[in-house]
Image (tube, rainbow, N blue to C red; front, side):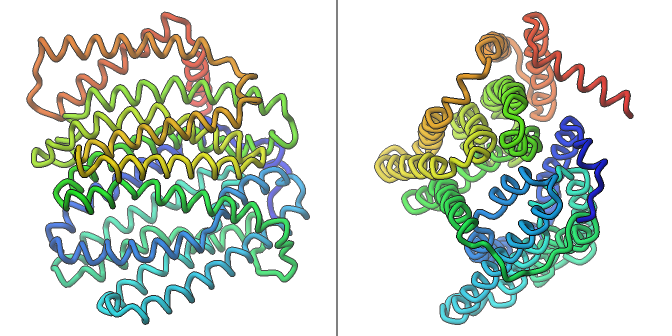
Length: 492
């Protein structure tokens, strides 16, 4: 192990990690937003469809290759990261298990591709995009997460994406370049992982496969977390699949726009707190009072952020859809307004799952929660989409997220009852009421025809009003953010 004692004794700043991880997330979202309008015009719908179809096939095998290794590796590795010998052995064991799962996934992939005749016309695309499976395995992002090295993860990802952006405009010029486009997409997603493999060997641990896997210890929780990932995958794609099956491609297009915008908002907000999860895993095993203090602080931050985010997504749905997708997708606006409220449930639930249930080894409870959510989602969609249309798929997301959140709170109540959340709920409720009243006044008095101007003016106004309310009510989260920001700026 190559990490120094100074790195161990002085853990990275959570504020700094939150900022750089947010930048990484935003850049990861901006990259396809910049490239897709260009490549969609150059390649045409048919060739874009081929690339996306091949990617969807590969994603199923990638899901198996990954198992539940990332969550398990971060949880267990963070708890022993100060024990050099134990961590080295653990990292090599998990890396070996991941190599084996990837080899099985590749074998199943090759058999499937050659056995299924309909896939033969996609052979080149499929094999190009399957490279992401192996590159993800050797990238060992979970090892960097154990050491909270988000600065490195963010820097390497942004650099590779910037290079990919240049390559896209230099090399993709005609419809037949769709294979080059697929290759560049793989480079954008995977080149950083090759870099990461060699960097990890020199900085943290000499990665190599070993024979002593301690499979009995690792495979149970890994497969449990894998089951949860499968449920999440089904849960995430059920709406799109069933809307397409019952209502056709046009409605899928509207629904997909709303879901894409919702996913962007969720990822950006979630990136602010995900950086704390390795620290929470370590504290849960080594310093329970500090674990509860950090849990309390971060859960308050989640609440004060996600509830107004849901409301802002609702009131600004029109300019957001118009900016991202144009006037042809006006029908997606009410869908986004419905889905927006799922943010108020999914982000606290994600935090409870990753900050309480998984660190405390309650992953089986996580599977129960996610499975119930998936079942609720699918049952509502199957029963009511044919009769009431696409809006049902939007409401089913809220119903499913609510069920998952309630169950997650139930299974983590012994920890949640130790937290002080009442003041944050009150302050957030008052701030959201002010935003909504201001929104109603705008609707009846002011009309801003340009969606970009509308988004900037109203977005800033609502955000400032919310912040003023929190300041006037002396919300402790605002003071925490202010103090952290001042310290971060002074450190330069």
